Amino acid sequence: MDMLEGLKLKYQDAIAVAKEKGVVIANLHMEGEKLYLKGAAPNEDVKNDVWNAVKAVGDSWRNEITLDLSVDTSLPQPVKHYTVVAGDSLWKIAAHFYGNGSQFPKIIAGNPDKLKDEKSVIHPGDVLVIPD
Image 1 (cartoon, one colour):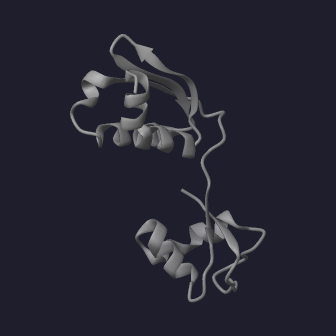
Image 2 (image 1 turned 90 degrees about the horizontal axis):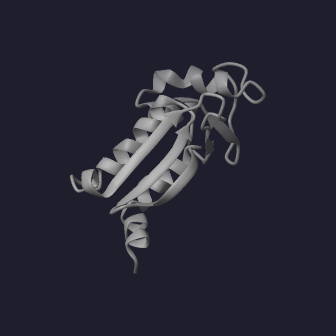
């Protein structure tokens, strides 16, 4: 395995986070002895998530990868979806995603076509948008 493929494998989780969260990767190649990843993230939180994934590899990242990420707010913002299962409630879903069930109005606001208020009924199989 050549050095490029080895480093791409080592940082595959960070690359996956970038792709999953809508980072547009412009370059991914070797520059000298380092993997070079240049791209644009849709917001600062996504940029930080990619950095955190890089740093999770350990201190060796400092000598192995150059991460050149800018923020481009014109890019589509990442959207999470959740498929309702039996036994779910808006409170339970909010507790899972936000750590606090009382945040369920965010889910209502993110799904105006499906949910009108806290009395809206959800069913297994419904796909809900989970706003950040």
